[in-house]
Image 1 (tube, rainbow, N blue to C red):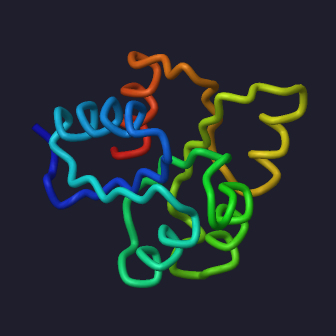
Image 2: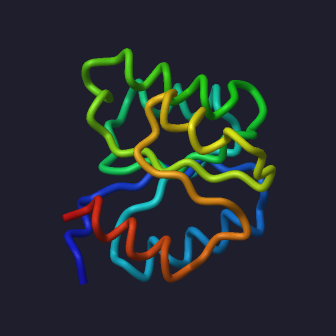
Image 3: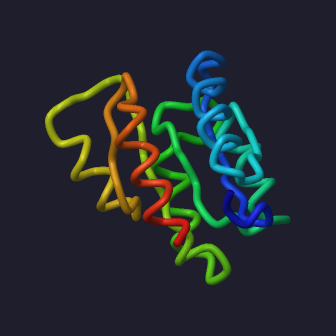
Amino acid sequence: MNDSRKTVLCVEDNPTNMLLVARIIEAEGYTLLQSARGDKALEILQEIVPDLVLLDINVPGLDGLELAREMRQDPRLQNVPIIATTANVLVGDRERCLEAGCDEYMPKPLDIRRLRQLIRSFML
C-alpha cells in the first residue's frame, strides 16, 4: 500500500464517475478529496495542496479548464499534476486541456487500467 498521506482531489459532478474514482484512489491507499464544482475545488485548493488533481473539464461553477489555468497561476499549485477528463470528446479537446496546464487527458468512459497507471506514475 502507498503512503496514505498522499492526497488526490477529484473534481467531478457525475456521482457514478466519482464513485469509480473513489474506489480506485482508496484501493491505492491515497486520501481522496471530492468536489462536484470547480469553484468549490478552488476553495479546497486555497487550503490544501494535493499531490494530484483529477479534473472533469465540464463541471459547474468554474469549468475545469479555467480551474487548471488558476492552478498554474498559483506558485503553490503550479507543479501539482492534473489529469483532465471529459465525456464530450471533441477535436481539439486534448490540446485545449494541455494548453490550460493539464498534464494528461483521458476521455470518458474512463479506462480504469490506464487511469490507475497514470495515478501511479504521478504519485511516485
